[in-house]
Image (tube, rainbow, N blue to C red):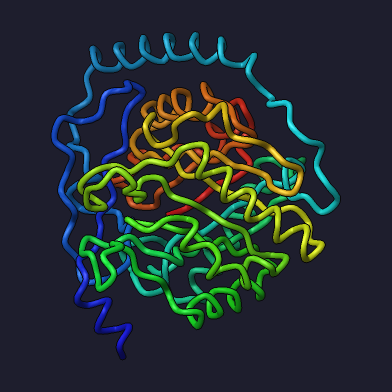
Length: 348
């Protein structure tokens, strides 16, 4: 009951508008989207909507010209890939497999697909997506996953002033049970607000010590420079990624586990600073996840500018089910044509 009261009393952070390839941020960031759930990243009706405009021959020509320019830039970046890193250890998931993950929180129907549907329906939908990827790329085995936001950024400070809410262990166990029915991975996503990874990760160590548990960290909601989550875009530095990777490395070594996957969400340049200083280690496989939304052209531009042009190790791609976020949704065939190869697909 106390958790339910806390959920009802705290303002929810709405996701911010994804950036195009240009480095400039909007002059006036969108305000947080009001809601009744305590779960962030809810696919806001206001901040994620793009006005539909009538098509025309001139607009089609302009898009075709833009595609040619972007394709030329894309080709120039191919030389950066693949990234030279440590050889995969036994039991490593990447790069031999592709992860297809459902994202969200069971306490919110608006935040993502993980909580939008009843568990069995959600799992059947995940089964269908996994099969679609297997059919489209039979050479790459597909590993299903459930990606749970375990620490949720808040629009209100809370008692400790951290602007985040920790989900109870019982909720994590519930998602773990769902995952066990599909031999799926579990990702615990952390939105620190004004807290830090150093404060939040140790609490999750017991779960991360399980072989099928992995980690996601979200710079968008890391307010290390002040501000309220949802009213400005946060940031992580390479030092933050290195801390998370070192934390996971210690768990792998201490428990003699296969390598862990670390997903880092990103859709702006300031979302991750000093990427060249990120240190790769064999016990941790880092995925830079393209977390933007919009038309296929816009998303490819975001992917090219903030993921492909600043190589770390492996790459991911976000897919939205709601048409107001991805309209039209980028097809599996289009994603498979991207270089570097997308090895982590997240559905919201």
